[in-house]
Length: 184
Image (cartoon, rainbow, N blue to C red; front, side, top):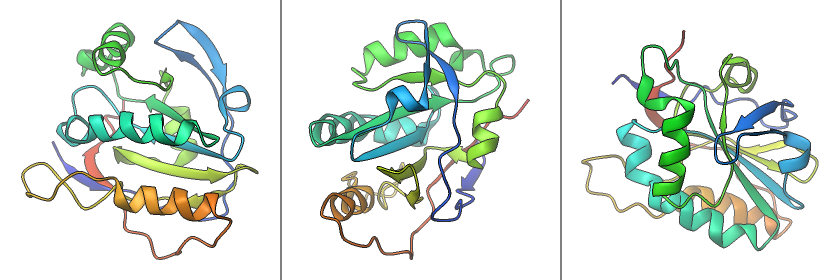
């Protein structure tokens, strides 16, 4: 595993559109039909990354908390499944079930969506407002496997709460860190 930071897509960037298969129900879904009323959180994750495994319960809790407030979460896996078969669509479906994902878990087979978002690592977070403009591209919180810091989701939660309160999110954002996306 190579520790990789986010590329930090510029704030204000419009969310790139997509049509990807949701491995939970095998139906192709678009950004337009999945976006939230007040905000949309795009999360690049995968099944096997220890950084994602470390935060999975917090991702589920965060989605369950904010979905009721008009914030939709969308998870996307873009890893090369030839060299990383544990991240394939069938395994994604089971992983989503095992972890009680309350959000779609989309498969980006071509990796074009990850490239459009300039995603670099898992997990990588992109929070968009109701106009699908990027307002936060940073870490969930300061916790990493083995560093002893509890997983709270504080940085991302603060960004979401600030957005929901119609306040300005601090543009000084710390990049997410995790395993690099496994490119083909």
